[in-house]
Each structure stands twice: as C-alpha cells, then as structure tokens.
Length: 208
Ligand SMILES: Cc1cc2nc3c(=O)[nH]c(=O)nc-3n(C[C@H](O)[C@H](O)[C@H](O)COP(=O)(O)O)c2cc1C
Image (cartoon, rainbow, N blue to C red; front, side):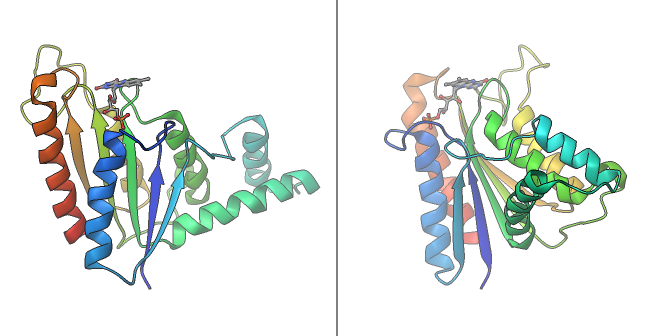
C-alpha cells in the first residue's frame, strides 16, 4: 500500500486557516482518487522532538568519528531513527506551511535537518530516494510567483526554493508546488485568490 507522508507546519488551530483549507482540498481529492493509500500526518509545529541541538550534533559527530554512543545518546538516536526510517520508507511527501519571514516555519526546517541525517549529504549523498515525489502547499500574504510585483527583485520565495533543493539533494526530483499567495497585499481579491488556489490544490490532489 503506497504511503503518503504529510509534513504540516502551522502553530495555530486549524479553524480559519487558509493553509489548512489548501491542504484539505488537496488531501480530500487525493484520498478520493487513491482510497487505499496510507496517509500519515505530522504537525511538526505541535511536536518536533529532534531539533539539531547540542546533543544531536554531538551524536552526529560521534557517529562520524565512529565512536560508541552512551546509553542516553543511543536512546535518542534510536528514537530519531524511527522518524528517519518513516521518511525514507514513504512513497510520496506533502509539505504544508504558511510562509513565515520569507521561509518555511522553523519546525519544518528542524524536520528537514533531522531527516537529512541519514543521507550523509556532506559526503556525497549516498542514500538517494529516487522515484519518489513531493508537493509543496504554501500560503503567503505577499506574492512571489506568476507575475509577482518586481519592485524588489532580491525578495524571493526562499522557502519553496530551499525545499526543492533539499529534496533534489536526496534524489526526489519529482517536485511541484501550489501557492495561495498575495491575500494580504490584495485583500479585495483575497477570496478569489484563495478559491483559485483551492481549485489548483484539488486538481493536484487528483493527479499526485
Ligand atoms: C509570523 C508571521 C510571519 C509571516 N511572514 C510572511 C512573509 O515573510 N511573507 C509573506 O508573504 N507572508 C508572511 N506572513 C503571512 C502568512 O504567510 C499568511 O498570512 C498565511 O496565509 C497565513 O496562513 P493561515 O491563514 O493558515 O494562518 C507571515 C505571517 C506570520 C504570522
């Protein structure tokens, strides 16, 4: 049974969230088209237990130097490995987030830091996940794509660029995105913008 893993990052409740609506349109269409697939969702804003902190980096360095881990380090490492295995064994990935300060939310970045651990990217990316696909569903108050205002060309959607690049590094090149964007800078057309994005998400869900 194909496994679809959803990495969802939104710290607020789902009520009134355009990010959640965007996701619902996508996933409802997906489940209708693929009723037997297993969907697993993590809201990493509520629970991201393995940040790349002092402890995690010291384990990383010890493993690199082929040193033994102590009992606490081993327990932490094994627990984190369960999350990493889950990522590596999934067939499809859905990343869902609002843009925060021109990037993905910090907890989603922490999640990426965690799963990158097994891909050893600093040493040639030995463990590639070819043949898998990913989609990024993102909302943002400003507009960054498709005829976005070009008054400041230095301002880009680094969140989407970053996700795409990191997934490419681990071999996931079948990557697409759906953006609901510009609602804050164009409030008069916000409903229309959202409706169009929801339609796009629904279509993407049918085909994903
Ligand atoms: C802390 C914070 C930072 C934000 N930073 C950006 C930003 O850098 N660029 C942008 O376009 N919108 C930014 N926004 C706006 C959100 O991305 C936008 O309102 C989003 O659609 C919210 O989704 P929601 O309805 O699910 O909460 C920010 C919002 C918050 C709360």
